[in-house]
Length: 244
Image (cartoon, rainbow, N blue to C red; front, side, top):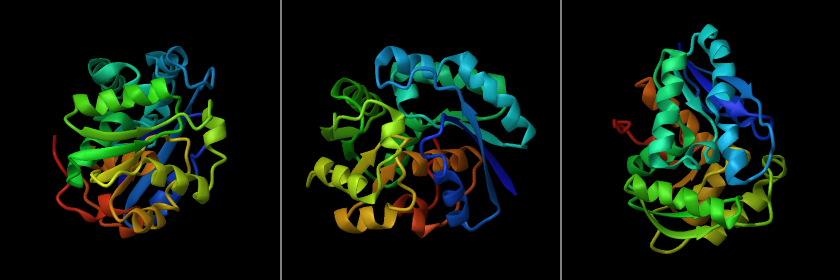
């Protein structure tokens, strides 16, 4: 049994995680600790506070007691908003507090893009344009070229993103896609996407990387586990998992 720990902010799309656990179909346990959201707004200052060390540390003990072997901060914007170096310091502090390997969804996207061989990606985000631009900058800092960015669909909070269904998620992915993109990235962990991955990849004809999918894959990478789960998209059908 491999136990994976996740620090998930609030309650928007956390039900993706038991679904992913089921789709993995292996001896993988997925444990969530919910962190305090504070002000649920897609603004730089609010997002920086969302991933503050004291907020993350509050959920660490619960995951440690669950037997987690690796821990991931399951919030993309709460990572990349600190910039490349700041996000590295965030996960280093998390690893020290947890006493185990740690990462974040933001780094998961960089590693996952390389895993599926996507040198160029298109981004479809539920964030305002300024926040989406910060994610694109983060990807470029990690060596991933961004062909197009689609943001600003009028969603200001994670709670709103959590109400989207398959039609809205698919429309966002289609709007973001470009012919020269090797993959499409949907970075918000507040979006329900685990059930839609086969449809997304079939419609776009290329790998689609979504936040909660990437988050669990990143934890498996940290734990040095390889799981083939086609229901979770191209990312879960490639071996070996990239080591960085």
